[in-house]
Image 1: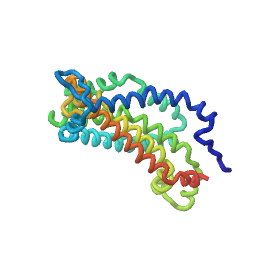
Image 2: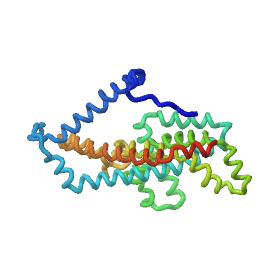
Image 3: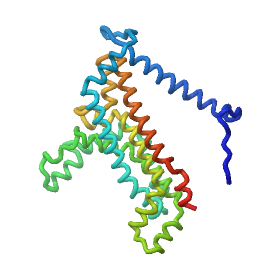
Image 4: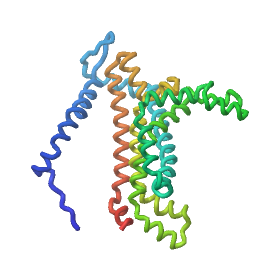
Length: 292
């Protein structure tokens, strides 16, 4: 059955999308434009000066310090995405195929943990990872030296907090993809002699790719703006992009530089979304054909 698409100039389509368009213009495009204009200004005696030059951008591209923090942010974001996907795949698979009787209860618990205030969750991890906390006490009881339990205020602690707070995004996107897969395809693979591992690798995982990519993109983009985890669990020793931008605006009172760094993070996120979209929609008909 051929689906007819309405032209972009269709009056009904324009009226239906007008509220969303107005919302995007008011709360996204206009602030983004103001941020871009602000990046071409200057400061003098901690006050904004309308100079209209590229001195701020020269400052951004001439100092390795800014880009080292951006690279650190990218590295942490990619590690967070990888860990979230590796943890979410077995969890989502178990919810779909092994835990149907308690599936709703587990989903409610995940949502409840996700909706809990991020500050409470983060400081809860601080108490858990502290030298006098539960984890260190257990490790010392097992014979580990005190130096082996220094997890808090390190990049590892920051990554733990990021994964914990962002994990539901990948769990639920992968779960939705797995739940839509026709079980007859897996049964056919079993009948053809494929093992469970091979069936998962060659049938289940390719069909779940949209959910994996969608969850990975969500986690990556949100990881670029994390602030609480590196500040509290990481101790602020290795700041990430959000902390750099906060310091630029509040401590240095350099709004043009803060605006330029904000645009750099936005561009990184936009490029990521574009790459993910090109991967997801390169062959849009194949997933549908595989499920027929």
